[in-house]
Image 1 (cartoon, one colour):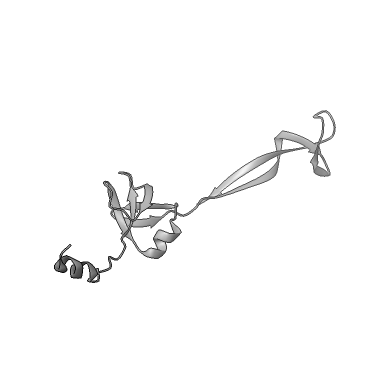
Image 2: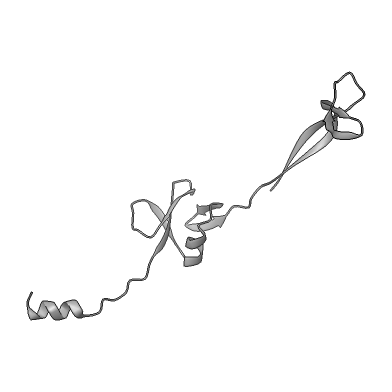
Length: 111
């Protein structure tokens, strides 16, 4: 090592600011988050979004779009067909020949 190489090694290196990326497929669904430059489609993110790494997102026209979660509500409803239960207590399953109230599980989705 000569004198020029020695002094060049001591010069400060400019820090490189990190680039946060979200790689996605052709339909816009997220594949993975990375700080590396890899082949494929990606958009640059801010630090907070990168750290939280949300999964309920999609990339549309190069912009990050949040998908609203679907709320699923399950509720027992009295029906004509279903599980026969004691008329005064839904927790007690009885024979269909005995006095009963039939219940079915109803599912509602709210978007």
